[in-house]
Image 1: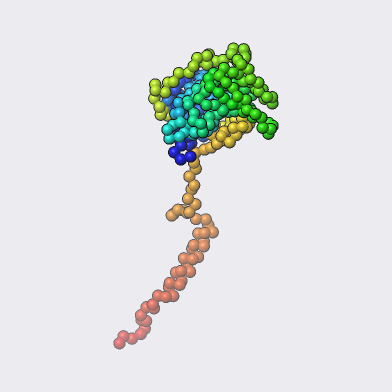
Image 2: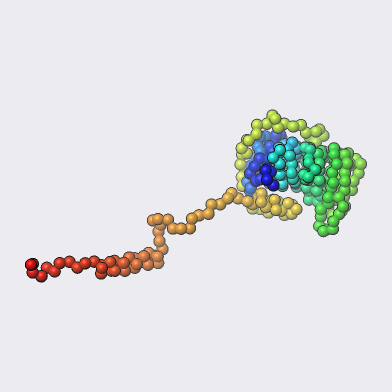
Amino acid sequence: MTGSTGALGAGIGVITEIEGASELIRFGEVFAVASGVEIQQGDLIRTKSNASAQLEMDDGSILNAAQSSELLISDYQLAPDQSVERAVVGLLSGWLRFVTAAIGPKARYEIATRTATIGIRGTEGIVREDSETIAFQLIEGQVDVSEAGESTEALPALRLRAGEFYRRTRGKRGIRTKMPEAAFRASLPARFKRRPKRQKGKTLRGRKPKKLRALSAGESQDLVAEHPRFRTRLLGNARRGKPTIQKDKRPRRGAAKSPAKAASSRTKKQIRRVDNSAKQPKGRNKNRPNR
């Protein structure tokens, strides 16, 4: 869309708060997460067991990932006024607390997991995703939860309102309750028990991330195998290398030639010399008397 931002390589947000050690995976390279590093479309944020990271996007939304989480900025398109046109944030595993900015009537903002997609509008909530279950507490606003799975059957979306709770186990329909379950409340990360505060104005943006290593082919394959729903984005992120420069296949001057080409070249030169000698004028006959 004309004028929109969010293309690969363009900054669409910034990391404003970091605790513990975390990693940022971008185009097959692994970087250390640090405050001030800009976020790009396609980035995968991976927090360690004792870490957390807060991302503040240019539209004003806050994405707060707790320990042992994987957060994929799958798609994030901004209009010229920095409002969201379309955003898809993938929670591959772990915990996410989000606070989104106001969203226009034609815009789409989704939190996607393995088995469900949460369509939100100016909403705050907490999501937990593991290999078998998604659990979601809606704190403010209203959302529609669409369930994804192995079946192609179209299932009606569930509408949640502020305060309600949703849980779904793989292969089953989700359930909705008026309040979060006790087990969910007990397992909440400590930082999620308070509302995230904006830090963007206190963070110096544009910090260059420190490269740690290249992502191995095995790690890349594991990511895709574990998260088939995000296959396209993960392949583009993990396995895409830097643009390669096509080499000029024309032989350079002075380049060594193969024996066959060298012999052919010598033969052509010999023929050329014979032809040239036949055309040259004959010299004066020494035996001819002078006049």
